[in-house]
Amino acid sequence: MWFWGGLLESLSKVVSKTSKLIGVDAIYDVVEHAKIRLPKVDFHQDRFIKLLDFPDASLDIVISVDTFECIINKESLVTEIHRVLKPNGKVIFAHWDWDTQVYNSIHKDIIREFVAKFSDWQQPWMDSSDGLMGRKLWGQFQGKGKFQGYMDSFSLLETEYKAGKYGYDRLHDLAGLVEKGEIDIKEYNSILHEMKSLNTSKQYFYSVTSFIYCGTKI
Ligand SMILES: C[S@@+](CC[C@H](N)C(=O)[O-])C[C@H]1O[C@@H](n2cnc3c(N)ncnc32)[C@H](O)[C@@H]1O
Image (cartoon, rainbow, N blue to C red; front, side, top):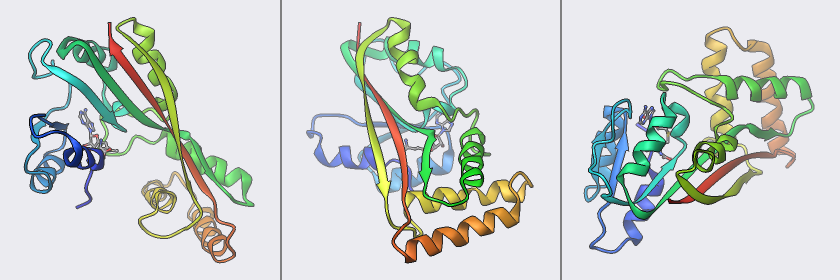
């Protein structure tokens, strides 16, 4: 099984011994796998449908990466994060904006269609999805008057097309839409073929942008 929680793993290596790290995810297997990999982190399995399972003003910082689009009631989660944070507590939410995916291709219309289909796709493990989540973080946090902060961004750029690379893996995720008949198999295969040959001729290029909201509770 793949591992989600890379940031938590990095944080566990740098935080002081007195800091307590808590990981939250909705899926049992994800939580159990992460528990084995990060035994010092306290994990909770939670879908964020009810209230967060933490007392008022109990946490210093809440960090989330690429999960917010899956949450059905985003407003109530933002309210809950505000409640559980200590005074001046921090929130950092990062999210890919799926419409910003860029693949070099001569098949301009097909690649645009694939990016849009990926962005609009609610995958089976998601309670909800929003391909534009990255650009909406500002409104979700700053716009509600509960946090004061700023936006940052990070663009992932790749020039190599192989398994384990982000652009390669996302294109292969789209096989799920081919199976459902939502992407034409001939077009899909022609794009996979093109990516391989662009890689060979050193013309493969992929990029996607993550937007990040960093705020302080007010
Ligand atoms: C793209 S992964 C990102 C995971 C992790 N934050 C990371 O960056 O490695 C999205 C995660 O959201 C979790 N998820 C989906 N719906 C959720 C929900 N309603 N509440 C909490 N987690 C949820 C999934 O189980 C999955 O692990």
